[in-house]
Image (cartoon, rainbow, N blue to C red; front, side, top):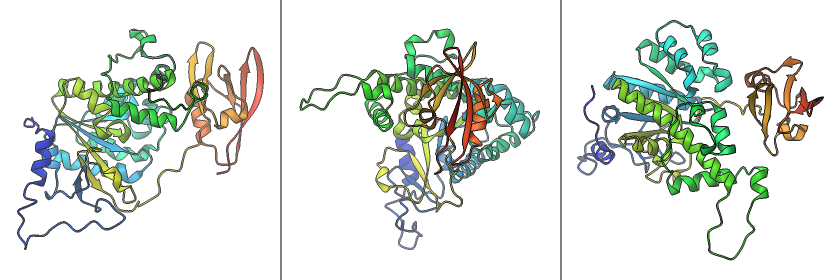
Amino acid sequence: MPSRPLPRLLLAAALCLGAGTARADEPRPAPVSAPACVAPGLWADGEGKPLTAATPLRRIAEFPVILLGEQHDKPDHHRWQLHTLAGLHAHNPDLAIGLEMLPRRAQPALDRWVAGELDESAFLAASDWRAVWGFDPDFYLPILRFARMNRLPLVALNVERSLIARTARDGWAAIPPTEREGVGQPAAPSAAYRDRLTEALAAHPSKEQASKAEPDTASDAPAPPNPAAQRFIEAQTVWDRAMAERIADARRTSGRAVVAILGEGHITHRNGVPHQLADLGLPDSVVLLPWDAERECDALDGRIADVVFGLGPASDPAEPPRPRLGVQLEVSAEGVRIEQVLEGGVAAASGLQAGDRLIAAAGRPIRQPADLTALVQRQTPGTWLPLTIQRDGETKELVAKFPAE
């Protein structure tokens, strides 16, 4: 069992110990050259200041929860996660690995994978990877192989996307407890997190938001809360809570340090998952981020993460943007229906409407959302996808035209 974790401030002090007492003949970290804020291959604190310890992983491995952020489409981020995971394992082999990528229902597939009962193709099918996540599994398979090689438990952290979409549409209170996938009541988000989510939503307004926008006034009084924005914040908070609960459960039931692989939006500035973990009695988590060479230095504000690692220029390009139809789907007794059409997307341009039932795409029947997702993601720029829908009892033929760029 690892020793009792150090508080975060003590961690920072331990990592920087000796920074002001080095002798003139001792090697010092190479200066960070523009444009990189953090020199490639070096660890730094949340302000980008190099850490004098050769590696902070020995200290970090003592924490009960270690959160490794990522931008999902960047291969170098996943390579950094694997190397960091291997370094942590060298200091503390008693680890479990949490994955945002899969919902709770995929846990049996993860258990069978670690036990060696599934090969890669069987695991991807059993976990429904391409439908529930969609990003290239080759980004994550090295981490999955590492877990199996070392018999480290893998934990599915997520919930169904339909639960988050339903929360954003109807609000958490409208969802019966029996339909919440076991997720409890989230802690109220911080004001800073609410502000950040509100800004993110404002950058992609829905038709409902636009219709409810308040006119500009000279008054200093705060505008009344936007119901759509409130539900969006609530949905994000439920999402964070769901993953935090799985992390906390894994920690308490196994006694292992849990290394969670998450999108960085869930963990930066200790909002999101770290905030929910603290409410669950686990305040001593540590946030690690990879720092791309081209990333803005102003973001290193001392709060974005506890520790960052400098990456060099991208060794290969990020995964190209995946084609998107621009709809949210729901499964009903009648089949797959469109729950929402996103303004400005391919679906809106093709004439699809909320309430339409999808019957076929490119002549292939649509029996579940994954059927449509697979077809859309195979579309190349500039191509057309024929769609058969049912609207008000009438069958219609539409064509989704994907932009050339």
